[in-house]
Image (cartoon, one colour):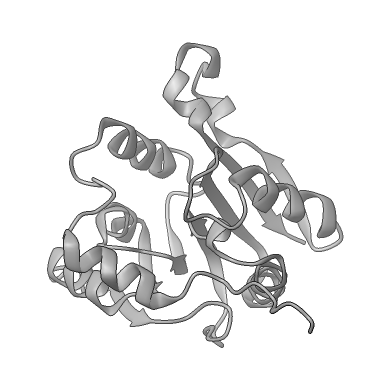
Length: 207
């Protein structure tokens, strides 16, 4: 009997986590998380975007920081419970739309000049990651930017790790994406900031 193929982490996994705690990853209280979000915003390649897409918004902490940089922002997540918190947090930001989506099975059909793919890729199988990559490229406008941020070390709930997720973009999509490197190099001495080494950040531009 052929063994069953692995599956990406399902939405019910995240629903159960949110039932136990409204902020399970301490996005509002962890120095690591707040510093990472601040660095993410500082790493944006433009002052403003016309139509942005955030994949994996969780409870909307980073969404709230990203929204002032966008004319329109679509933020999606697997968990409707997480999205409930995100909608409350961003209720005074009319440019933000929230939708529950199971990426890559569901994906928006509109095009974007900026896509943020943060802390999501390692919950996917390699097959679903490839589908996600192809859909990101298809919906990213020529000249548009993709910013990726992922934790680098193994976690029990992860299928992949951050380096694998990023390396597949760098190695397999050079004909579609120009790799601009780690934007933190422009303003941060990485050797003096150990917590910044815990996550990988890469910026790409659509050719």
